[in-house]
Picture 1 (cartoon, rainbow, N blue to C red):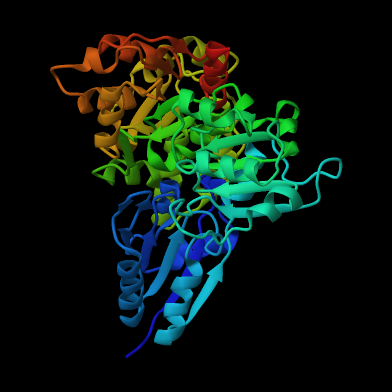
Picture 2: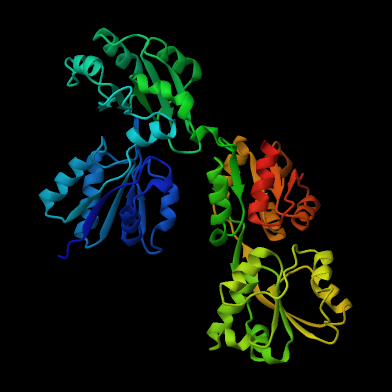
Length: 505
């Protein structure tokens, strides 16, 4: 029988940006993804569309599948001739049982590779502003399991050497055993005033860091109700946190923001908000698709020589127009005699990616802006092609016709309702753990409203801030009963992020 191959992949500590290039390649290549509780779910969006995903989450006291069961599953899938990516939080060989899984594969004669990952033992302190080594403090560091059973008759940890011979100690999976850990270190001679830090959910937007000393940290953790997963750092380097902390200082840290934009276009907004510290919950309410009937657009493309102007109102308008242009066997030379207008700088940038520089660029998608942009152009009697969304607002063709132009509107794309992550969204709204919902178009507002149960939309949105990319989107939101708190002055993704930042500051 043909045997597959297994990649034991370290998924990193939580921040999906810390996955290695090779780890990401393995995820994309795999037929089967077997993933853990601590592996970032964001990484799963890179999985091949035909791949099977199997969750075998393991956290303290709650195992979806035992280790023996996981081993058997990996072997079964590999022997079926499949490529398996065993996705493990952190690094496979740092308290990740990767060695045990590799031994099973060797015994079964199954080829495998180890793909190291960034361990939380290094990443979580770094994101908390704690360097594990520093030439003014220590040149030694030790990683220790904090999961050792305190009732064992004999420990395999050399507590005396740790307490007196190592400058920085990092305990993984040790929150429950914190009282035992501190007692052992104190009993073996470590100073009671030695600084200690616990970093919970390190490298994620939910990161929380609590500091104290060896003789105070247990009570502080108890008072704060800090739970696993967290790593424990013991040593004088913890004192550098006040100077070096950076991750938790970001302005949107701890804010959970819902992004309703179409998935294929959400990355810019998600990345910008994430860089500012927010936890983004991607809940696309729309999916952008070609028109149901291509004939009107094809007819316009076939007769491009009859037009004087072509006006693009959005990035999608540009994208889908050129896709259809190429599918009909033409290229950008078909627009050689046309003058172009792109509404907004982002649309103009998209147009330029196809080799065409816009002749005029209205700053915003508003009638006044369009009139101003065309005021130096004689469009009377000119033929203007307007490829845009199926249900676009009439303001633009109305204003152009007032100027004497003949305008042909054709549908180049349409938006349909999407329900991605709708259950998770409703769960978070009911829990009251959503801080903000962002809307980037009227379509996102309408479809978001359709997701909410009829009986309690006001209750679900109570205390939730609403941010709109511009006044048109804001007006739609208000018409549908939403209180709008933020309206971007610049109707772009950077403008929306700037408005959100200004609101919270």
